[in-house]
Image (cartoon, rainbow, N blue to C red; front, side, top):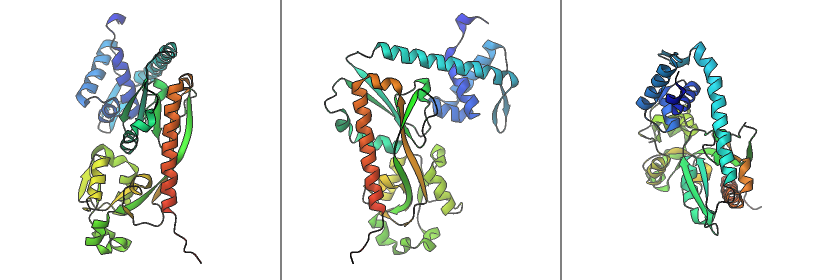
Length: 307
């Protein structure tokens, strides 16, 4: 094999397909089209003259050669991440710093409304928000900060718990006016519901709604969290939302106990500590989330009447 003609980008695609065993899921993770991912895999197999995957109806399964080579590819990815971190360390004193943050769509909506609060007094900081419900591997240097529902496992990453997120059934006052029986769980099968479709169907709230409706399809299905919120806010349907979003937006909670509770975590690189400006960004974001989560939990607690 001619190393000068080697397509290093295809290794990244190879790792994503090996991890997800699917061209479509790998394409979502890499923000590429499915045909592009397929071409990368085919090109790499041609360059190596090795079949890396068995194409099955259930997905892409690594061949014996693929399993052996994926270990080397992961080592290459770690090396690339180490190189990226080394470059960042060399630029620790640079007058302009970029902070890349990956988080869910709800998180992007929440933080971008508070962008000035996050960057006040930090004129040399540029923030890039990446809304992605898939968990980014910070160990590959894809972002500086990740906010999600699990702590990292990589030794170079640090985790901070932000709080707990409860999922409840919510509806707008306008919907409850036209559907007075909506507060009765026994009538929920006959209500108008909004939920997720497409790749968002794997989200926790979508799974909970499917269980609640026993597989019955909801009237409205969207692949955007903000679109789901708009339908509920307009009073057109009921839905399941995280408490820290719904409690602050005037929606009415219709469940006493949460349908599920998730932990919320922030993870970040050790190298962040070398950049006072990025540390300030991180600390401000932690404060914003913790305050919102604590407020949502307090609003969800049963009210105790004075004796």
